[in-house]
Each structure stands twice: as structure tokens, then as C-alpha cells.
Amino acid sequence: MAERQGKALESLVSSLEKALAVNPNVAVNSPMRLKDRTTGKLREHDVVLELKEGHHSLLIAIECRDRSRPIGVPQVEAFGAKCQDTGISQGIIVSTMGFYNTARTKAEHLGIRCLDIEEVDNFDWLLAPGIYATTRHLISNDWTFYPVEDGIVEKDEFEVIDSDGNAATMAALTANAQNQLSKLLPEVPEPIEEGEINVRFPGDGLLLRSKSSGKTVPVNYAIAKLRYSVTQELVPFRLVQYQAKDSEENITDAAYADMKFGDNEARVMIVYKDGEGGKVVLIPKGSKNA
Image (cartoon, rainbow, N blue to C red; front, side, top):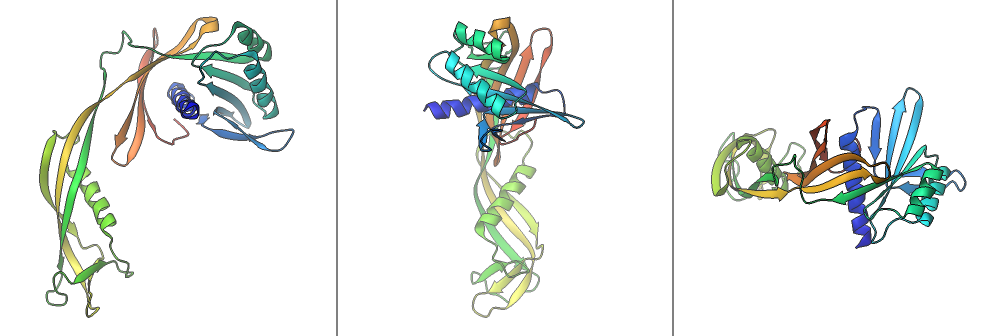
């Protein structure tokens, strides 16, 4: 459980840093493994910001700690030694439970920045409770193939192959149907329990091969009958404040929601700071750079 919470915090901090990055020369990596200067072994940092300018490179490492108690001196010292051994220019610890005063003092002595992240219930600037996610579901796809010449293959006793003789699998046909469904429906379709459309596909080098005789004939076109539904649900925002409490600095407010777009997943994040305004950032899942 603690490990999953830790990974969730790493993902959140990585998203925040990507959303806040304004310099195109900043790469956000999470996680990132760097070689220990003493042992030569690779050691992992939760989040690393790599700032490149000319032939210079500056590394900032962020340690994400999602634990049941505040950060103490031992954790600060261990992270400080790790940063030194892996060539980190600036170390940062992010905690969901804060820091003991002695840990903050030790961190200041070692040049490590202490940041806090807290969940909150609401923001004055945020009016929407979340984002409505519209999902297109392909219920079924039934295909009928029309050859350029009749009488060479019999109905229901052929297989569909490409020009190299590879079978056109149902998985590939379904993926093609899903792609066409997404293109044909409006950008924001109305919810519907069940709908149906017929789509004409060109032959595109496909062949029909008789299972009994092995004879082939090119496909002229295919008609796919697509049955589908459209659902809509509210994905609520999660709200956090990213702060440096020791200096009373609010780095940013953030509202985020994890969305699915077809086969892709992304995090929609709104970052906002009083006096500076805000912006909306879409962060694809698995993306290293903003």
C-alpha cells in the first residue's frame, strides 16, 4: 500500500513539474537512474529535472515521501548523501506529512529544499467539479467483403488475407472499425445507449482466399456494420497545494483528473497561482517531457 501511495505521489509531482516548466530546455524524468560516483552502481531518483543550456547540464532531484509521519533528520541526511554520490546539483524533498523542525534545519544546512503537498477541498478560482469524459464504445462490428469478381470464392468458406498471405485477424479489423468510429462521430457526441452506422472500406490490397481450393480474388471494398454506444461521466478533480512552508511560498494550486482518450490515457492538470493566473496542461501517460 505504501509503495503504491509513493508511486502515486511521484506521478503527481512529476506532473506538477511538467505543468510548471516554462523553459523548453527542461526535461522532467520520472524515475531516473544515475551512476553512483563511488560504487559505480545505478541509483534511482523519484523525479529528476534536467536543465540544459549550451554544453552545460544541471540536475535537480526530487525525493517524494508519502508516509504516515513527518520527515526526520535521518531521511534528509540519507537523501543528501545520495545526491552527492550521484552528481545532483540541487536536492528537493516533497512530503505529504511535513517535516520536523530539526529536519528543516538539517536540510537548510545541506542545501536541500523542503516542499509540502496537501490535498484540499476547494479553490475559490475553480468553479467546475471535474471534467465530463465522453467515451465511444464499439459494441460489435460485422464485416461483408465484396470481391472484384464473383464466383471464385464461395460465401462463408473464405478467409481474408493481405498481399503477403497473412490473415486479417478480427482484432485488426476491430481496431480499424474503432478508429473509423472515432473519426465519424462528432467530436462531442450525444450519449446514446445503442447506435448503428455502416462504413465502406476500400479493398487496400486485401484478398479473399478460398479455404477449399486456395484460389484468391482481390477485395473491391468491404462494408462494416458498426454497433456502438456513447457514455458520459463526470471525472472529479483532485485538488492539491504545492508549497514551501518554511518560506511561506505557495508554489501553485493544482486541480487534476486522469482521463482516457480511446486507447490513450492522460492527466488533465490546471495549475493556478494568485497574481499570475493559470493554465491547462495535458500530460500523456508515460510522457517524460512536458
